[in-house]
Structures are given as C-alpha cells and as structure tokens.
Image 1 (cartoon, one colour):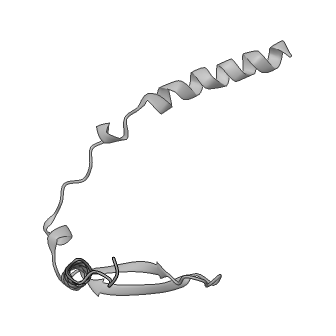
Image 2 (spheres, rainbow, N blue to C red):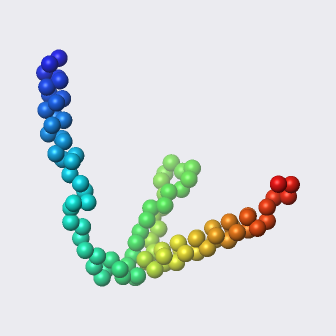
Image 3 (cartoon, rainbow, N blue to C red):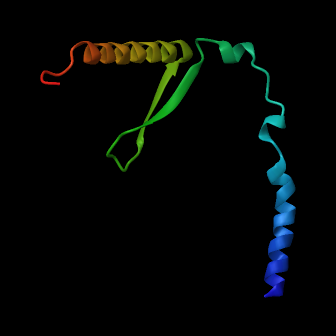
Length: 91
C-alpha cells in the first residue's frame, strides 16, 4: 500500500512542472501577410444535426466567411427587432 502512495506522489511531483507551464508563455508565430489574405481558403467541418455519419466539409475564402457572418448577424438582428416590435397578442 505504501508503494502505491509513494508512486502516486512521485508521479504527481513529476507532472507538476509541466502542468505549471503557461501555454501563453510559448511564442506564437507572428501574423504574416498570408494570414490576412482575404483570398485564402478556409475549410470547416459542419456537423449535421441528427446524423450519426458526421457532417460535411465547407470551404470558402476568408472574405466569403466574413460576408456570411455579416449576413447571419443582420438576419438575427432583424428577427430580434421584429419580435420585440410586434409582441404576441394577449401578452
């Protein structure tokens, strides 16, 4: 029993220095012009709800993804304004 306790303490002592390292201390690569290029292709996996087979891979340029996000945000804002401007009857 004492061996297991000693083994547990030894493994915890060895793991502590690696757990104490802060991942933000590592130098991140600087943003290059390529990272800011609006024509670079970005692919995302979009899962299908209710499917066990996973989803599909969707690829667009960075500019297209930005435009899609803007359109989605405008649609959400429009729905929120309509719902608050026209409350349900009887409320």
